[in-house]
Length: 161
Image (cartoon, rainbow, N blue to C red; front, side, top):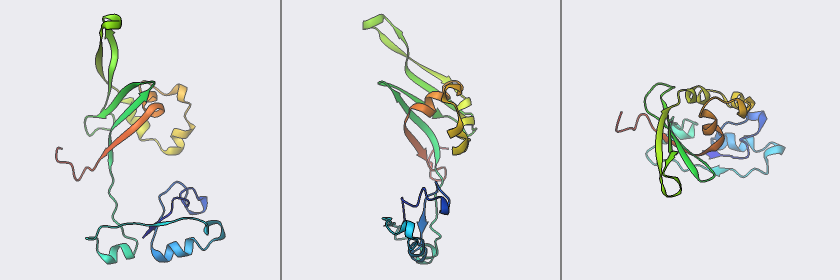
């Protein structure tokens, strides 16, 4: 199996999709004059994966789910955390939401529900790209404009459900 980053944006072979090819398909795809200069890489596959599967392009995929996003804007970190199975089960954590005591005081953290986040996360890339960032509702704007690190988990491998 091979993977080609340069094929990723190729509109002739479904742009924006990860491109993984078996040896025969990789050779065929890269015979095209537009793709002859591409630098493709062999994929390292687990040893316990049956030979037949990967030789026939049947590499099993694992669908991960987003469970938290860390955002930063000018040294101010906030987090979005999923707390349940429902698409709208998102919380917004702001460690510096309020301040008590002026310059020598302390920050007061705040956790607030932000169910609108779920609606934006269900949108396609095309829908998100066409949004006017000034019209995004509530704290979802912070999520979509300032995301710094996304955290995913495997629903089948989770120890705590």
